[in-house]
Image (cartoon, rainbow, N blue to C red; front, side, top):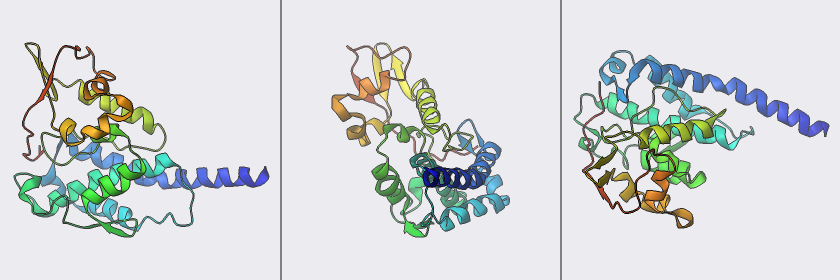
Length: 234
């Protein structure tokens, strides 16, 4: 009993001390993100905070530490969004992420000592360990068609609440889910990741209606609109 008490205290102490990464990420997003758009030009002039966060992402070592699943999940979410910004800032000005060759599947970053692309971080690491469809509304790919980037970081404490809140906010945006004259157009995210939203016999519409008010009516068919790959810059 005493051993488990000591172990719990040690885990809590490590996560509390490691919260500084999440706090710094929180301050970074708060300073440079406004209504989903990023001030890439200003970050390029003031790169110190971004570079420090990228260094932390690269050097974090959990090999001899025990952390919760929510710690890892929130770390990977923030890491992804920060590294997306890093890729844009390093090449700024650009018209959008697709104008950079290998933006998602070619350019490598170091994450906890391992080299990986953004796709490998998102699909091979984060989603593989945590197959949560709400992640599609918090990971942002530097394009205007993406769910808007939050102006705060995701944190281990209260992560589930944050994910639900953000998913609800995105799915209630009139431009993201477009309902007009009885027709519904949704983001192509629901096509690209359809299998993630149809788990346990659910449909895309069922998933959306868990979060959207008013709900999409059963007799309404879903279509999609063209994804906007223009840069999400201020």
